[in-house]
Image 1 (spheres, rainbow, N blue to C red):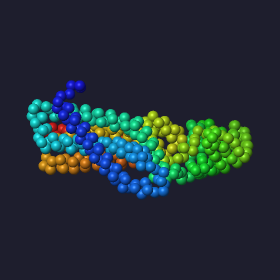
Image 2: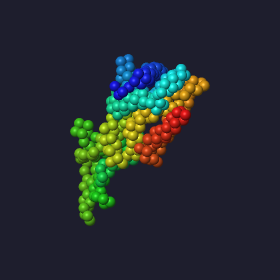
Image 3: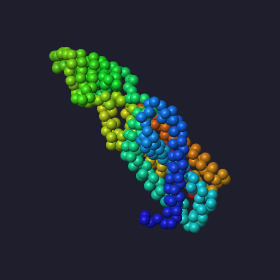
Image 4: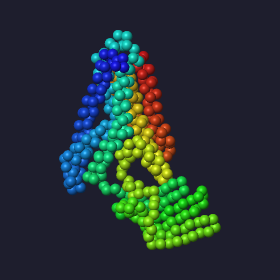
Amino acid sequence: MLGLKKLDWYIIRQFLGTYIYSILILSVIIIIFDVSEKIDDFTDERAADATLWNIIFDYYVNFVPFFVNQFNALFVFISVIFFTSKLASRTEIIAILTSGVSYVRLLRPYFIGAVFLTAINLLMTLFVIPESSKVRIEFENRFIKNAPRFTERNIHLKLDENSYAYFQSFNINRNTGYQFSLDSFDGQELKFKLLATFAKWDSVEQHWTIQDYMIREINGDEEFIRTGKEMDTALTITPTDFKLWENNTETMNQMELTAFIEREKLKGSDLVNAYLVEKYKRYAFPVASLILTMMGFAVASRKVRGGIGMHLGYGILLCATYIMFSQIFFVYASKGGLAPIIAVWIPNIIYAGITVYLLRKAQR
């Protein structure tokens, strides 16, 4: 299969076995810390309806994979450092190299293992985790976090290329917007303007009802004005557009997220860059597993004083700087100072270069 030798299978088993073992150990630690942090929430009156079944299968069964997937590159990196350092300390790597296996050939099973884990991570990130996050976030919003909220005022929304809506404020509990206006343009020329005191969402009929309204229609030099007490109208927005769940994009698979971003662009949302960062991260982070695998091998394949401890310390330092640089670039991209796709991939490019340097150094 793939022309793999006994040596390849030996290293792949060591790689995947250490990876699975580290995830199991760290998952237990994650659950212990999370339970200690949320024990007050689980015993609060708000969570009175939450059963042990809900806590285990609705929350933790979905929370642990989410957490592990978020830091998959780190788990892969630590696994490679750990088992490769053991091989080096037992002089197995020296024995392999002196038997005629080249340093580059020795990288092959590492690369295969990394590609396998990267493919699983990519599948989980794009499709599986968003579905499981729906259950987890629903649990959090119901039993742990506050109810949906919308506290912004002076809300501007772009409905299409020529139409803009405005709410002075919006009450998410009543599904009602106050001091509503709707403007429609032909190029730079205003053609239609609607002003209303209220705009209320009818959840049964699925449309908006405006009250105390005035409509201005402009046709060249002519202007027509009409007023009324109440009228139904169709808008391409719904109250769900005002529900700002924290991390709401986590529940969208890649196709849903792409469609959501296009709608937000049309509305002129200020958060488009942040959503684009989330979209591109889903590709960049799995690839980071591949880069960090090669880096981990370069760091741990040489026998040094201090053994595994020295390798782990050096490796964790490199991984910590990768995470730090990633977060810095993400913030710049979210604030609009840097193109999201560039910000997301820059850390991978930088650390790919560092990996190449470390591999060349290790060969010598």
